Image (cartoon, rainbow, N blue to C red; front, side, top):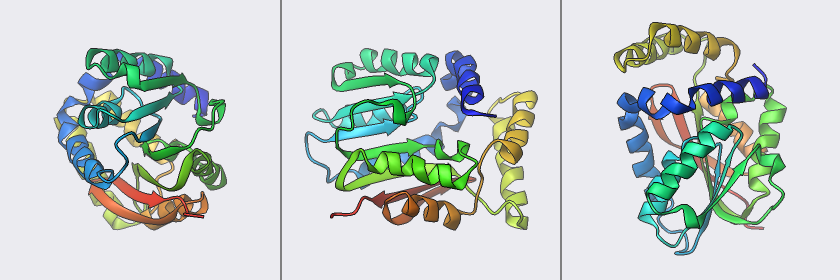
Length: 233
């Protein structure tokens, strides 16, 4: 699928997205717990860039814990961003948010941020050079020494380990009441539409995009997450 097809898919899924994935919330909650510890030394008035923010899980979590932080939420799916905006309004954090419907390279401002999040986004770039440029776009909008927390599906798809992880992952999806048809679509997408690479390969792409020392800080099944920094100068 190309970017517009992916956008259309998320537009279609937006209304039921949070309900659909509610039974996998423990994965999200653990990731957020570690994210908060990684970002705990940011300034009281930090600016956070949320790339591919979706319905706003990490934005809402961080905003409620840090009342002085301001957020730039970037999301190509208008339907997903609408839900993010509604959630921000309902929790009283919308006044600290800028909502941008579109891709990162369409954001006119290149204001510098203290940190960024990018969860399960770069995996949709199948071309590794394009994926590296995507991370460069994030780095260009961050201050020197700023943090990036990013996650993607990762594994060596040619390995026996991947077979074990994929089987367990699909079982988890089925137990979370994801329909058999949706599970089948995901299995097909992982093979054709998602850039599932070995963790070391993704870390190398993050580094080639302008970040230093990508460190794996979280894994749950196929989801891996890294923290990295822009150079100090």
